[in-house]
Amino acid sequence: MDHYAVFGNPIGHSRSPFIHLQFAKQTQQTLEYQALEAPLDGFATTTAEFFSGAGKGANVTVPFKEQAFEICDKVSERAQKAGAVNTLIKADNGDIHGDNTDGIGLVKDLLNNKVKLAGSNILLLGAGGAARGVILPLLDQNPAQLVISNRTIEKAQHLVDNFNHKDFSATSLSELQKHNFDVIINATSAGLSGHVPNLPSECLTSDTVCYDMVYLNGITPFNQWAKNQGVKTTIDGLGMLVEQAGESFSLWRGVEPDTSAVLTALREML
Ligand code: ATR
Image (tube, rainbow, N blue to C red; front, side, top):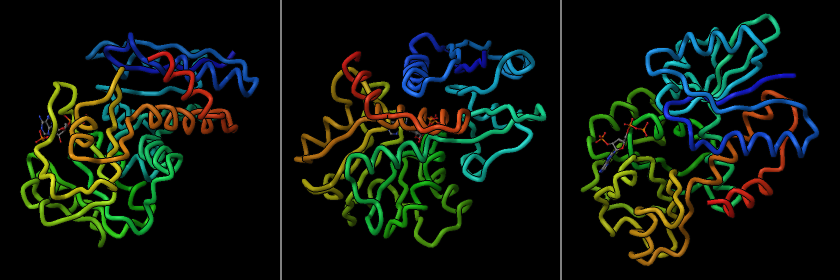
């Protein structure tokens, strides 16, 4: 039987085994999918062991996505741009290929929620790994502009310099009051400590869609802040989690699972 896994540390609360086993059931695939904790200093050896056995593919989560990028024999363009890999695929010749499905997962979830991206003014908050991973897939949707902002503006400017795309620019948080966005995506980790990026309320209207890449049992701090500003549509990152998994599953198994059914089941479990 083909084996798949998600590697992280910690990994105990990962939803990935549930998601992938549901996909397998839906598509009548026989496979095993486990959550495996790699030691913080032992990611490369743990994954090498996995792939020398029955391992056919793996997901990678915090804090190993950058290390996963390093161990690949070949990576996709989107993984290259992200500098990080969340999907490992064992090729027939034994090589390990790396891809990054986080960004397309975000885009698919936004589109599933009927959020218009083409021609829109989009603000991306944060300039860490989570933000970097979604820039190229967002630009591929042809927004009017993608603006990135971050508490430490130099990091955002650095990403803009690296991408070198005409519709991609950086603005400091305080300068954002001069702008007005159709979509605001929070890719900071501020919410994990109960904080919200220091965003001027002038940059949104009640029609702005606010998307938080994290999810919780209940509304996230960023989405609560947005609602307090009168925003009508807020979305959390649970759909992105399911969509990135769906993309990984398709890469491994060559079939597209029904992500909406799994998202509904997962939402009920939160
Ligand atoms: P990840 O892989 O989740 O992106 P990361 O690389 O550590 O994690 O990046 C965390 C991001 O959240 C950064 O953009 C960080 O801003 P700084 O670059 O200024 O550190 C942002 N962040 C974390 N806590 C924040 C807070 N309380 N307010 C605003 N931004 C915050």
